[in-house]
Structures are given as C-alpha cells and as structure tokens.
Length: 247
Image 1 (tube, rainbow, N blue to C red):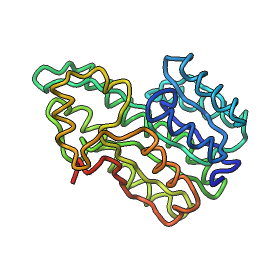
Image 2 (image 1 turned 120 degrees about the vertical axis):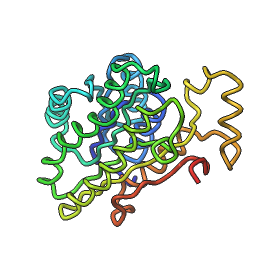
Image 3 (image 1 turned 30 degrees about the horizontal axis):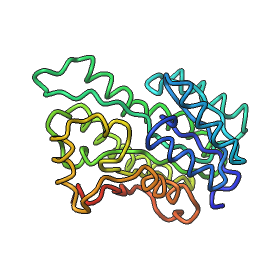
C-alpha cells in the first residue's frame, strides 16, 4: 500500500472526484479526513464505507473560504491523527454566467471558494509539513483555466489562479521536501453530468479526442500517484486527465 499510515485531508471529499480520491487513498493505506461544507450524510457515508473496508476516516465540516474554519479543521485533524502528510484541494463551486449578466456575489463566491480556499488550506498545513520535513499538496484545477470557456470567467479565473499559485508554492516549499502539483480533470462522469441538456452533453463529448467522458476513479489514480513517494521528483506540474480536451 503506497500510502500506508499517511494522513490525508481531502477538501470537498464527500462527492464526485473528492469521494473517489478518498476511497482510493484509503485503499492505498492512508487515514482520511473528509472535508465537507454542507452535506454531512454524504461525508459520513464515505467515512463509513472506508471503515467497513478496514480503513480509518473522519469527516469534518468546514467552509474552505473561511481562514478560521480551515485552521479549526487542521486543529481537529492534528488532535485525532497528530500529523498531516497529504492535502488535496478539491473543494470548488461553479456559478456560471456571461460576464455582463454575472452577479458580483457569484464572482466573489467562486473566487473565495476555489482560489482563496486553496490559499487558506495550504497556509493552514504548511507549517506542520515543514516541521515534519515533507508533504504532498495536490490542487484540482480545470481545462477552463488553460483554454477558457464562455460563461466561466469567474471559474476560469479562479482555477487559473490556482495554477499560478501551485507553481509559485512549489518553488517556495521545494527545499522543505514538500511537493506541490495540480491535476486538471476534464469532463468527468458525476451527478452533475446527468443533469445537463442532451445538446450540451453531445457538444462536450465532441470536444474530447478520446471520445468519452472520464471516470472519477481515473482522476483519483493520478492524484494517488502524485501523493505517493513514487512522485517524489515531480513538483510544480499541472497533470491533465482530460481525454485530450485541452490539447
């Protein structure tokens, strides 16, 4: 088990890609902290699934947009496990809309969660990782940050900011044996995909060279690799798991 006895905090870990990462980490031997913002039943269900399989997991509620909440989340993690080896910044929100019609609060919420949330969580864990002389930080971004997408100025800006943040933080922390990377999933089969109109579904599918949507497990596999010692010489990189959509 390549993550045996590691402690991993996954934000937005109750559903979709976050859930898949939690389950894959647990299978690899890690102890999991499942962060969630509102759906306690979904988070507890993931924790229970991990425990039934013989793993360890706890669920902690925290809005990553709040620096106070993220610090309290780290304090709870340290109280239970005493260490933190891996942080996955997966929590995110989408409030799409064309710029001329976009509400200021929709801009603010997306930036606060998707970009400031990464800042808050990284700042919360960095001192502990430095004290431990090592750690892994993996940020989840998006092809929208690279190619742009009409109606997603707020989302694209937030994820683009995370890409730049990832590269800068990787330079800051390299001397402390802390690797900082990002994974850019494409269109992934989640509950949200099931709700989109057929026309948009077909348009998205036509943009993907591999001709299909990705699976959450395929993204989780990449994240697990980056969290492992096998990726010890990789830092400051943006790894695309998008079926070629951003080529």
